Image (cartoon, rainbow, N blue to C red):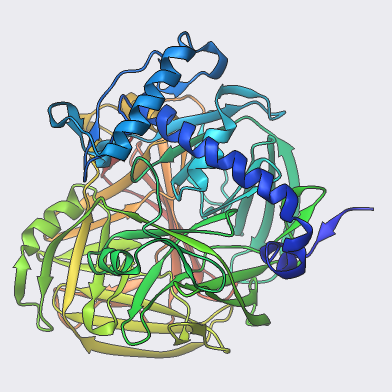
Amino acid sequence: MQNKITSLDFHTLYDGVQFRRLQTPRLFVTMKLFFVEILFACLLAASLGQSVVKPIGRVHMKRSHCVNNNYYKGPNCENIDKQLTEIKQEIRALRSGDNNDNSSCQICSSPWQLVYHHDANGNAVAGWKYALISAVLSGSRVRVRVGDSYCAEADNVHVYAGHVFAQLLWHVSKNGWNRFQRDAYWWWTMVSTDGIMQMTRYNVGSNTHRGTNSKKTSITWYVQVSSLPATPSYSHKADGSRTQGNLNDLERSVKEGKEIRCVSAKSYSFPIQNVAINSQLKFISGQNVDHISSSLVNNSIQFQSNAYWWFTMVTSDGLRDMSRWTVGIHQSRGHSKDKVAIEWFTDGCWEEVFSHDANGRELSGSRKLLTSAVLSGHRVRFQIPTWRYYTAEADNLSIRNGHVTAQALKHVSKKSLAEFQNDAYWYWLMVSTTGSVRATRYNVGEHKHRSNSLNKVEVKWFIDTRPWKKVLANDKSGNVLSGNQSILVQAVKAGADVRCVQGDEITGYAYKAQNLAVSPDGKHVSAQALSHVSMTAAPNPNEVMIQPNAYWWFTIVATTGFRDVSRWSVGAHVSRGHTNDKVGHEWFVNY
């Protein structure tokens, strides 16, 4: 008989009675991970060519004898005694605040780092699994390469029983490496460090399950750190009492547009997809909506049957609100609350570049600088100060006549900053540098339009300060205009984050490649992008807006110039057309 814990029980595993049952082994794991985190910071710093000595915004550079091909080789290290001596010296230096400005570099320039590679049976090939675990529990972003030709970023990550389990949710079924299937379905995967890759499939826009299966495969794990050593800006127990950091520092980070990531109950890492501040009651509130229900079977985390979306809203006083909705239909599977211990990590690699009033008039910075950053591949976040400093990252960015419009889709309707509405709907924003903010509302799991609204507000705009390098530009026939296709192929295989850009400051478009595939001949790359709801021209020619009777606009673009487009009604399994054309693209990588 399977040892199975339901999804609800699994997510609350470390609370109440079940926590007390696991308290003794968890104490052991916590102690073990404490030492692992110290080693990870030092070893990762060494592999980056850096020291853990970190003055504000800078890190000390030092080469290590344990460096080889950008990852730590464990027992192959030639000089363990010397390395341990260096670690002790660096920890003492860290405590004393010592630093060396002559050999410092910005942590924001640190690359995606290969920390662990295992074969199909979960046996280590390179790196160290506990370095990966420590990175996950330190709020690091995680990217996964499956085999040798497919790469995507993890949407959420669990650590359980000495293994890492990551959900990869942004993939729609393909017919080959660069085309969609006609009858499209979501292809969700759970990858783990035991070598098992589970795949479950649901129709786009309906509750029709298309099958679940598993296979064993080689997986390579990459992480990107925000600071060394990795410490939370703020952390608290389940009752809301502070354990580390200062809430004022976290609030300042939110106001400065920083990206926030959370780790709950020392086991689950996830990004905050929209964040706001309750200044009266003094707490921070954040949502995450990219999670499919899972269960525990024989010490392995798996997607559960009859799956549902598990939306969460967490606050800095320990409250967690959970709203569950059956995949593909507007059917609630429960709305509940609990309390959970959370560590809040901030990524300081963001900078304000432009702010304007409700009419688009410049208050600070430069709209041209923002436009240039978009066309240079940078990620973008926006903030609306009068909406309790509501801040989110753009899913895609459109440019019209030098103005930018951000489409932000990762938001479910709220009753307050601590609670979802019972009858939940998607709350999608179109935020423009003209000062216009349009909101469109559709029921979760149903093609029911609830309403539209338009506000004129002050907006602040932030860009990430990590380096984005244009490695390739191709025209619509696939001819190389600049760069090199092989460099892009190698970047994808090295776990790089990739962004795609079309057009210019008159008519432009930029977005994240949500999953990447290398062609069978190894010469080309295709990028799938799914976080886009259909848009049309707004009355103001400098803006775009979500069109009536909206549909999902899924695309696959390839370095051959080929683009495949699949359209599906929001909330219904109704095809709105499957076409292809030829387009030119610029490819930017952060690696």
